[in-house]
Image (cartoon, rainbow, N blue to C red; front, side, top):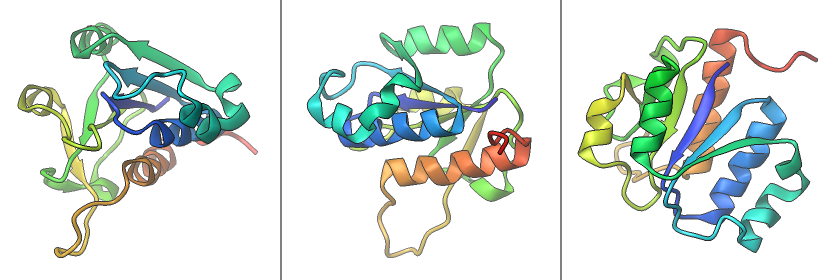
Length: 154
């Protein structure tokens, strides 16, 4: 299965939206701390609605904890970044990949960028700055699940 990971998310509503997405698609959401908000925040709960009970959310204290988990489990890290060189739809996702989304305000530090096994980008018009992180994660996760045949069965 493809997992989704958020590196030190800043915005509770985006995290709540991705909890809902993970619940609906049956994927695990990893939240790499520290988050820029209290994980019990009412905005997180409002965005996640009643899906929080259905979601599998794994919290990691920090990058070192998450990296140890990913390495120990033999998981490939695929970083979504504006500095990526491969359009996400051209990337060959594999079962077990973890799609890593950077912090809304700052992306990820260089050490995390270098650790990634793959760096992907969403092609955009050059005059546009960025797509909302939760929308980007949804686009990329959808493509990864399509390629690996891991969408939930109807």
